[in-house]
Amino acid sequence: MGLGRSYSVALVGLNGYIVEVEADIGQTLPAFVILGLPDASLNEAKERIRSAAQNSGIPLSRRKITANLIPASLPKRGSGFDLAIAMAVLLAANDIRSTGRTVFIAELGLDGRLRPVRGILPAVMAAVRAGYPDVVVARANVAEAELVPGARVRGYATLARLAFDCGADPQDLALDFEPEPEDADSPDSGTGPALAPDMCDVSGQAAARRALEVAAAGAHHLLLTGPPGAGKTMLAERLPGLLPDLGDTEAMEVTAIHSLCSLPSGSVQLLRRPPYENPHHTATAVAIIGGGSGLPRPGAASRAHRGVLFLDEAPEYDRGVLDALRQPLESGELVIHRSAGAAAYPARFQLVLAANPCPCGKATGKGMDCVCTPTMRRRYQARLSGPLLDRVDIQLEVERVSLAGFGQPAAEEGTASIAERVRAARARQLERLLPFGLETNAQVPGRLLRGALRLSAPTTRVLDYALERGVLTARGYDRVLRLAWTLADLSRHDVPDTDDVGQALGLRQAATAAP
Image 1 (cartoon, rainbow, N blue to C red):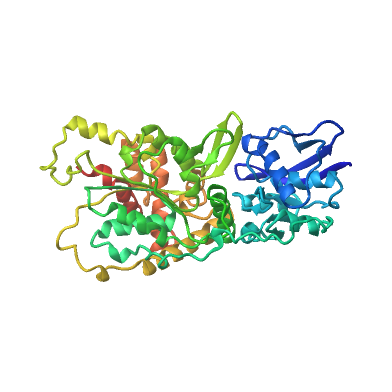
Image 2 (image 1 turned 90 degrees about the vertical axis):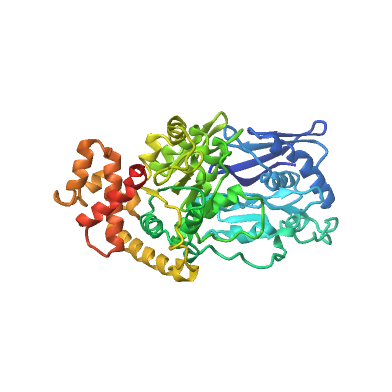
């Protein structure tokens, strides 16, 4: 009997830390103790490991077993430490040979099978960054773990098979046990992929279609205000289709977040398309921003990273939830503090808000059919705070579709051709902004707009006048300039001209200027 040692990974947000698992077998009465700030699910590992080892033909020692997870001050949670603890205990009992610097991440079933866990991608990424490229996971997690460059991944279905490969005596091992394939590995029994929303389905709404194209080209935030049935939701659902595919780094970021949020599955693939999140208006701050008990979990804002967060019926959301989005709209990151620790999640998303003009939704045009009092309208509109709206680049009034505009969908321009213009505009932005470490116009800071990208005084005269009159805030001034650069990119202008600046100002003030 001696000291056994293995390795695993503890996740705090998307950041992973190597955990050294020590196991010691004492001379006292039977017991199993886990040290190192384990949570409830990790404390339950004692019974899972005992049963899994017994049913695998390598029963644990009946003496006192002490497992210590280092660093002891770092909170550990989840069942992903099961396999690392089991391997350390078997090594302490001399049932297997040393496993070196191999990292073990898997849950154990009572029958000895290795079950998949969530968060495999960020965990393996952390292991490789820390210099531990050899990783053992459940067979159902192999495809996800192999997405990490430089990782040497081995997948096992049972603890017995892993112990055999690590030098255990095969005489008593349950090597003939082969579990049934996981349900996640079975082919999808659906009827086929759903038809992707296309812009050609949107009849009329020329101004809204143009605003959506501009928003996609520059990664700008968008507010759509209009009566029910005008097509606000249809437009928002088609925005992700206009966005270009994610690059390698972006795809890894997005896939890591979804790996952390989704249920354990063997069908994880690298996500190349921008995500789309559409939470219900009853969602809480924890659901949107993230949090929860113990270590904070990511919310819809982080799951929409590099994609679109759509809040339909935005005034119906709790105002505190909406205002909590103000910080990530500026920083592109959410740092959530809880008693068990703090976790940082990326949250660089495009926010799309949809709202009715009033509670009854009929205060458009002359508003003759509206039954709401002025007080009711003001109270309804005040649910979207001024500081939040000041961070929304495009604010557009969506008109009710008339019979003349309600033509055949095939007559409208489709997503593919609009997306091609968006990709060309993004390429122009990247070429211009790459020396500054930026990718899109929405990320350009004010110091750059008034420095290397400063426009001439005659070009910005209309903005200067609006700022002087108090129509625009300093933040709004910068956001109009960013819009102007996007319009110039779509028009293939080297720099924005007066028309681009005027159109940008109109896109920002369209909703607020409407009656």
